[in-house]
Structures are given as C-alpha cells and as structure tokens.
Length: 395
Ligand code: FEO
Image 1 (cartoon, rainbow, N blue to C red):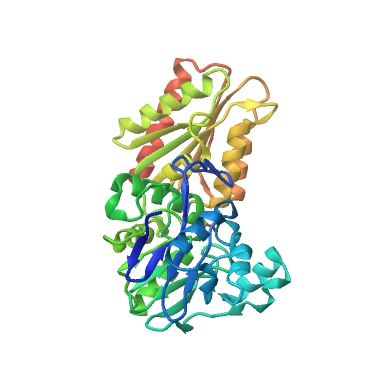
Image 2: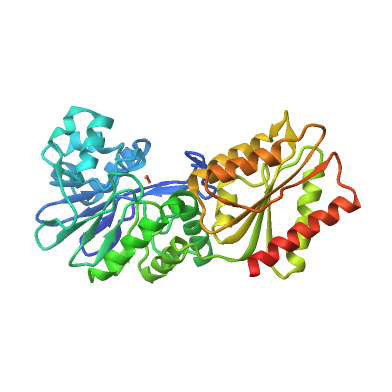
C-alpha cells in the first residue's frame, strides 16, 4: 500500500469505496471514501475510523506505518456508522487506547456499541490535547450534521479535520485537490452540500464566522469523505459561505415525471418560456435523474417548477418521493410552482402545493393543470408560466 502523507508524521489511513452508489438514498454516482488519519507523536493518535466493511483496509494501512496496538488515542469526531463502525475492532486491537469524543458522542457510542464505551473521555469546545510535539484542539460542531459532531484541528500544522463538513462522495486514487479534476471535485462538493448540509445553512454560517473570528487558519482541510483540500482550502469555505447564505443564479429547475407524455410536453413548453427570458432552465425528469441530482441543481436555482401527472387521485410516486426529500432538505429562498396533467379528478398539483406549504416553501399560485393531453392553447399557458416565473427570478 502506498503511504499517503498530509504532513510529516500525519497519514491518511482511510478506505476508498469505489462501488457504493446509494448512501442512505443519496445517489453516489462516483463512489466515496471514508477518511481516517493517523498522527505519529509521543501519543500515537487515530482520528476517526472507516465503515466496518473496510476495517481490514484501515488496519492494513495503519500496520504499514506502525503496529496498531501502539495507538494511544482515538478521536471520534462523529458517531455515524460510516466513520465509527470499525471502532469496536480497532479498540480491541489497541487495547490501551483512550477514546475521545464529544459528550453527546459518548452517549451515542454507548447506544451504538454498548457499555464497553463507558470509558470514553469527553472533550468540549476549545479543549486541547497534547500529543507530544503536536496539539489537537477540539471544536464543537453540534448538528453539523449530527448532535455529536465535532471538528479536530492540529494546531502546529494548521490542519482542520471537520469530519463530514467540506467533504464529497468521490472515490479516487488521488487524495488531494491539486491531483484531481477541479470541476468534478466542485460538482461533487456541491452535490454533497445540497444533499447533506442544505438544511443547516444557518449553523454553517455561524460556525464559519466563529472559526474565522477566533483567528484559526487552515493550511489544509481534511474531511472524512473524498478529497483533501490543500491547494486552496479557502475555495470550499467560500463555496459553503455562499450556499449557506442561499445565494443562487438566474436559473429554474424543472423537476417532473410523466405517464403518457403530457406532463413531459408541459415541462418542455415551460422550459421554453423560461429560456425565452434569458434565464437558464434545467430539466430533471425523475426516473432519468434522481432526487440527489435534482437537489444539486436546486441548490443554485431561484425557482423550482414541479410537474406530476395525477395517479389514483394523487401525486405520481417519484414526485411524492421528491417532495418528501425536498421538504427535509429545506432549500432556502426559492419560488415553488406546480403543474401537471390529469384524466378526470385531478389531485397531484394540489397535493404537491400542500406539501410545499407545509414545508414552509413560497408557493406560486395558481398551479397549472391540463386535462389528458395538452393542446396548443394549453402549451401556450405552460410557456407563459415559464416566462412569468423567469421574470420573477430576474426581479
Ligand atoms: Fe459521513 Fe454523518 O457520516
């Protein structure tokens, strides 16, 4: 195995998951990684572990550097199982290691893995842990994105290990931002923010401000998924600042599905109306695109138009799933509009608007419904809806 070094005596010892395509419903088209880091100092320290299916990889990578039994400290930044499920195995190997986590992290470790973790030592915001030549500083990151989350900062090297924050689901043979295609990297970082951190924008903004005001600087940001930011860590900080503020482009995302082509025709006419105003339209037909991709496009869109045919008096299943997913991720500052075709009773447009209102979204009224197959007049109405939304986007 090739040893990957972040700095002198600081190693990446994680695992690359080339094959994962579904990360609890987040579609990870380019796979992922579970990053863990090893620091050699007077106290040999492991920061986070990996998903248990890769625990042998973790042990093998550590063993290339040092006997894992010699680990003195294990830092658990976050208990979600993609980072902690190898911990019971590592804790058995490194029998004398002391485990550190946040207070909520300790509770969660016990709840996940049992009373063996009663001895975990807890740390709080600002606490420091001397390893020898190096010092770790812990930064509370409650709800970024779990109650237990915390960041670890290596003071002397100015390396931030923020666990899930600033990550990407991106499997790669490379580990650093200067080694990979920048567009692919930012595409995956955008998708990751949209699908995991989007509902936490306010907390993201506060945490970034707090860290900046504390005078802490980062030469490197080493997240728990994907690529490590060493060429320009400020790039991802700037992107998070913008996304968290809800900044968006003159763009409309049109998310729809269709049974016999009518809602598809409506969506196309709406897109024509949007682009006629010089505003970008992005078409996302569900079953061709997935919810994760749709949310990624929505992150930087100012409006979302959602189209569903009526099935059994209600919303088409793919749109039901999308609306549930979107309601949970709470995109900020968007105009939401609804359209669709129906055969006799209708219902989808009304139901989706109701779901959106319940989620606290700004709903454009009225929705647009057409019966069976849109004729020329119906398509003109669709075009006009697109045009009107585009004007609101530009206003
Ligand atoms: Fe990558 Fe919240 O786990």
